[in-house]
Length: 232
Ligand code: DC
Image 1 (cartoon, protein in one colour):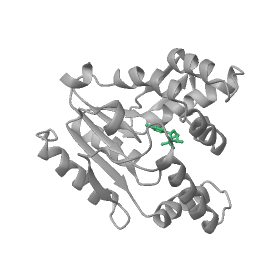
Image 2 (tube, protein in one colour):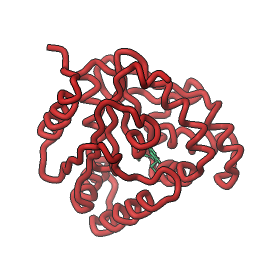
Image 3 (tube, protein in one colour):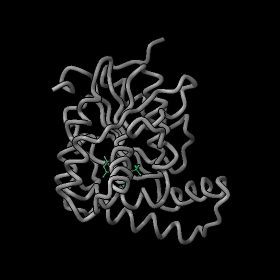
């Protein structure tokens, strides 16, 4: 398995914890590849809709998960990579609330998770990988050299989402967002397959009162303790 030879750093945690931003900054700092595993579940939800596969049809979803034509294209300006489905840039489409909800439905099927396991592990190529998700340190890369579980209070995560939505021009209630965040945590942490739990050897980090730079420094320190230093 690739991950044994190639250094893998896993950052798991709920959405709104800042892990996407931190993973991308860390990957850029180290010159490592970046895996946004949530995007795979989102791509599957979108591909299912486009191919008329019902969200109840676990077997067909697993076949689609194993064979869907997807890729990530690094952008020259260092921004979030372009997410491609069958040659089309679907980066913005997969971020809709509808796709997010359907992604959480398909993510609960064990056959789907199995089908995506090898595809996720294939991202562990030289010089190394920063993997972002919910079960990176527990299931996908259990032998990772450094594991972080990044979280933040539900109020803080709802506040961050609120700001994003307001910036996009959507009107939302903060109280409703706090409730949604808490419900989603409950569902993610109690689902039977690959629940979102910290790996036993993960370093816990709470980003509630920290800036992005402060979180990144703490993660860099964790990674350095495993023997990996950013190039000077
Ligand atoms: O991180 P995100 O919001 O893009 O994730 C989309 C969905 O996929 C979300 O419902 C959680 C799920 N997911 C998962 O079950 N396992 C992962 N490793 C990553 C995401």
